[in-house]
Image 1 (cartoon, one colour):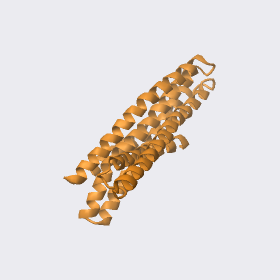
Image 2 (cartoon, rainbow, N blue to C red):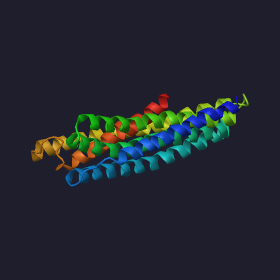
Image 3 (cartoon, helix red, strand yellow):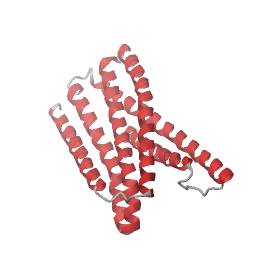
Image 4 (cartoon, one colour):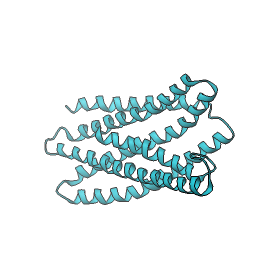
Amino acid sequence: MISSAFLPIGLGLFGLFVAVLVFLNIKSAPAGEGKIKEISDAIHLGAMVFMNSEYKRLAIFCVVCITAIWMSELGKNTALAFLLGAICSGSAGYWGMYTATHANVRTAVAANTKGAATALNIAFFGGSIMGLTVASMGLFGIGILYYFFAGDPHTLHAIEGFAMGASSVALFSRVGGGIFTKSADVGADLVGKVEAGIPEDDPRNPGVIADNVGDNVGDVAGMGSDIFESY
């Protein structure tokens, strides 16, 4: 049973390796220049700043939960599994969003210069990175836990902490990102369309940039962590 844990660990690492190769292939595509590059950089920067800020606060929450679990009847093994689950879930969401903000502009440039087929390929493989990362991190995390805990029936229950950690990150990423994007959407509509008379989704409205940041955070990173929780 213990030796079989190496299979999911190896498959998980292989999946992450493939995800990196796909990302490098996407990044080699033209990212455009001028205004489209400027807008893309602003969205990417905003998404990264939001995620870094959110994860700093999430880390505090996780430390409190890990401490409480460690001191409870569940013990240190469950606490360590909680930590691993949180790291795997957060990493999947963060990496998926990071690649999405690079794939977005390249999809738009490809659609404008090379046609719908090339744009669809970039968009498809950009989204596949999230799927590969979620499955790979899940296999890797569960494989690690089975390797250390499956040999003893008294410690096997610690694997439950892995799901708890993943759920905690999914809650913050999904709900936090959703609140942010909806707030930015409403604010951009009120100020842009109602007060300033700027068309919807016009980049002259800073709220539109914030809205796109929220879309990436909530619908990519949040969705990725949510899927990882279900996985």
